[in-house]
Figure: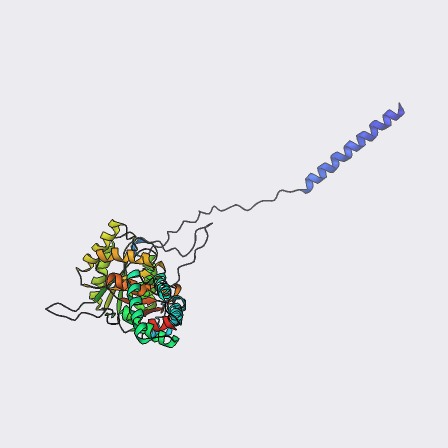
Length: 394
């Protein structure tokens, strides 16, 4: 009984002590008075400044957006001075080494044999045909070589080279007029002066736009002023590519929207060229398959519409020399649609078939005026028969 009384007393003391401690702790905490808050109106959003024609020209990105740097001022590209065209083919003759191996050196080895029998002559003719000379021109050349070797008794390599050089030059026909008709037409019969107009045509993949750009460099190197017409409106990058070529040499480019009527672009290019008083207008046309009648008819329309502003003086057909005889099929169709005045052979450095020069002239009756011998900007050269044959024969 005594132990129970003692336990109750101890519990009561403990309860009284805990209550006292709690009361003292509460007495130490005093509420902290907060300063009254002044209401602040939210910031008014600012309208972005507008420029001409209502275009937004914000100089700061909105919150949370990725900042976009302001466009830099366009830099004026330095105008290039193209390499002179005089003697270009001589400087580029090493590029014809592949053609030289098949056509030149192969024939020299055959012609300098001790015995020129029937089998040798057949081999010579096969070599010429394999080099894309064409069956007709190959047979003509073989007959001339047979007659002259029979009369002169040619045997040494030097004699064979001299004979072959003479006959190849004659076959290529140096008498053909290979000058580009790009001189400005003077005022006459009450009409003001006007620029010469040249169209560049061909199938897809022959390098027409690049050739047009290189041709602009050729003309500017020879002292002409040029306007370019980007009438290839079907290929998205064609106008940009041509404009880049023009900017490098200071030639102005007339272009239309993608998919625009190419004839209207050609018309405007000639009109602009007349207004600017330039010497030559070069019109780049879209590549087209020679089997597509509609596209070929459209090419004729481009020429007719352009001539409303001035006569088209040159229609240059760009052929890829590596396509060989297939290029002749293309050439025939183009010649039926527009009157071809000259041939530009590209990639002549990449083929062992230099005879295509003879074949295409024989097929169309028009001269090869320019040849491409590399991918450099100044690797388009005026064609010279003697220099070409000398390069073939080493």
